[in-house]
Image (tube, rainbow, N blue to C red; front, side):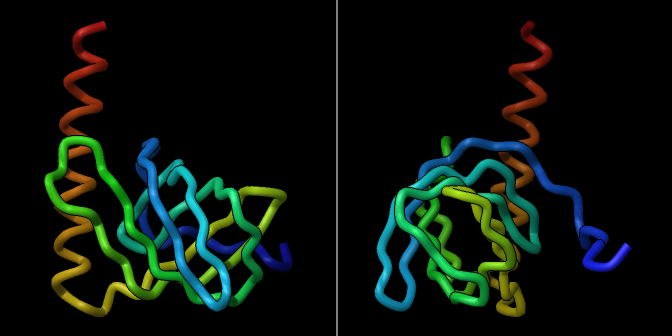
Length: 114
């Protein structure tokens, strides 16, 4: 079981466009799932494990970008990569929590309509 890591929190499946910026890299992508502690991204520019990125996420239904200034790349598989967020800043943690709550309501409403 070497390398097996339990998730700290449940991830919400979502598809939000985003941009990411790091040491010599600027890319665009889609965040495919989101939690208070991290996310799974498909991007158009390569990153490396341990790289710290700033994320600008355009969340459907939100008026302002979700800005995460410290996301560390934890794994990479081709164009996909996972990041852990530094959510020690209460304002960022509150914004992520609010976005997740909005997405849960939106997804629940759309699945009820089916």
